[in-house]
Length: 358
Ligand code: GN1
Ligand code: MG
Image (cartoon, rainbow, N blue to C red; front, side, top):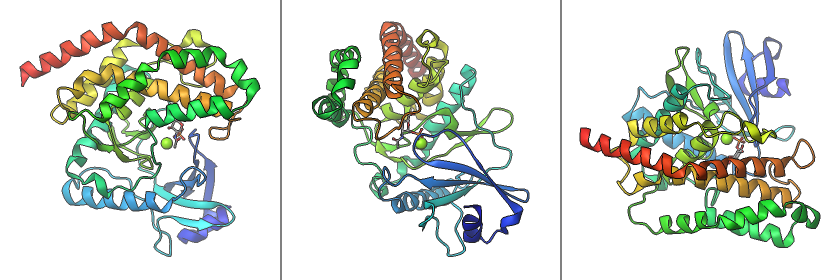
């Protein structure tokens, strides 16, 4: 495989090394070293991203915008092949592309303190803010209805009709809990017709490993732009709440380790607002806690629907894996709901104080 890749970039194969990198669920990622340079090489999962070429097209448009209006922003662009292609197909590998590894940058797999949560949120807020004048219609939809909770709920109902009968029986408790919380879908439906909600350039995958930091812990930029599409701020803020606030990830099967760390929650709100406070409407600012509920609930639904459909989307490393992931997310949701009023009152207070300062 290394030989095939090296040839595309005119690198001498014997001076290159290739090692698996990161822990994404969808694409395959490697680090390619050549001399003192490093690159991130990826194989795009084209059963999910069915038109990989439009990802490269979106990146090209974003790059032009940043180069023109914010040349100081570190935009990690694709490396072109010897045929001047940013995305290419090799029958032996699939759809491929490569980024330059930013020298001196570091990424984190877990959020070890609230300062990292603040900085991550600031970076995702900054990305959307800088792109506020970018015409969202220029972005092609790489995954239709990706964060459309109404559709995700339909897919869950469909899985209840057509899915694996044994697994449906085994998942009864989780299914009932999801159905009991359906008001989260109703609120999403209201948001879609709420004139104070706006669609902006949204990242849609705001896990902390998608932020590049410098050695001193300062955020540099965001990466993994495959799901950058028009969307609501609740997607980005919600996925940060989902993935930064608990000390353990969706993979944890010991649910006693799941926790809502309030200071991390507030760090996300404050970091995001440090960039977005003049972009969000006053109405939108009431939805920070909802954002967390929305994303945790949607992820639980997606894991469970996949479990009922025999793990065709996320795959599974052990029997019951996707059910565990779903129940992990439902535990997190339950804990968030228990603290909802407390968190909401602190957010409202923070926002009121911010408004006074302005
Ligand atoms: C997938 O591949 P990865 O880990 O970056 C998924 C996200 C989920 C996440 C859950 C295209 O992201 O939506 O939140 O798994 N991406 C896609 O870990 O479905
Ligand atoms: Mg991703």
